[in-house]
Image 1 (cartoon, rainbow, N blue to C red):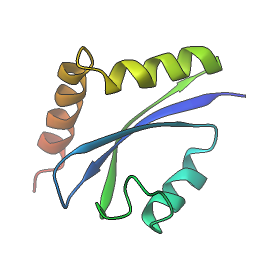
Image 2 (image 1 turned 90 degrees about the vertical axis):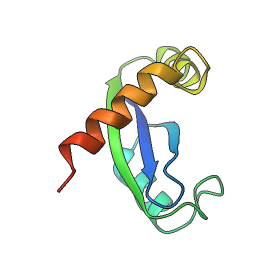
Image 3 (image 1 turned 135 degrees about the vertical axis):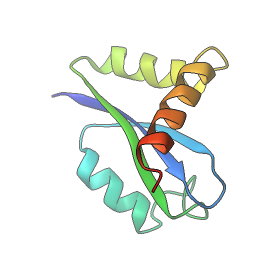
Length: 88
């Protein structure tokens, strides 16, 4: 079963949230409905990045990396690229 590591952008506080799931669609619905405590007060949220990873351990290591200080630069670059592409 593939895992998905994803990054959400909060339009409210302009910060990022990193998560990992086996069903991105179901997880996004939960986020958008306020069913995730970490993001319930940060809505609306936009999906800015997702990557599919076959192995559970690798997926959770990737999530942990993106949440780390070392992953902050990569996360910021993903955010900046998304905002550039969606600027109207």
